[in-house]
Length: 280
Image (cartoon, rainbow, N blue to C red):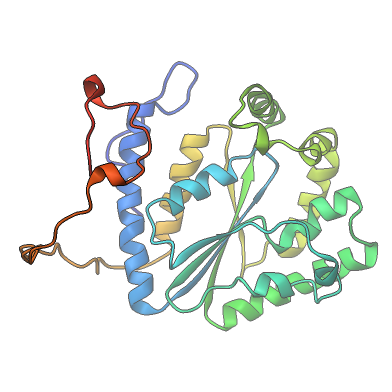
């Protein structure tokens, strides 16, 4: 496993300091790029499952993973409520459609485990459907792994106090308010029910073939770095990133004359220095 570039530094609240976090994040993201090139080179198929309570930090971690990867070969799967047609399908069917091909990474921001969590607690599935899921999920995952898919599952664990703080932050912030929904508020009221559902889910699906990796996430920055470190450590990869290329000289314009800028409609440049117009 990669070692941190330096011993961790914490603020007065016991959280990672921002400067340390940013430097370590950049280092690990560079390794993720190397890992993706290797996955492409070897034709590996990787599935990452991110589960946990609402506001546990799944989305932020996925964002930091994905922002440096080539989106053609690393995609986020965040499905909405199933349609009427999808409700009549084999339960795992709509998730299978998003599994990766060779050289790809699929990151599930919630997954087929919806049935063992929100659907169970909120009564969106029958007892028979729930019991069937618990029995069939380990078999489904074993099939994926036997077919060569690398499946890694993360469970983000957040305390009720920290979840409450994050919910309040979302309510107060205009740009974060979309992150909180009536379903989130309902989950807040059913904390114990979700805890029991999670315990049962782990009892059936935390297997040797496909184990859960628990991520304490009250400190979001630390959780993100820990997940990146763990993910990188799961692969015996090597650096196959192509070396830098040398840009050749631009060819001559061959008499091309650009259309006068006055004949084009530009976005108003409100941030130009001293009101100076700059044409691209």
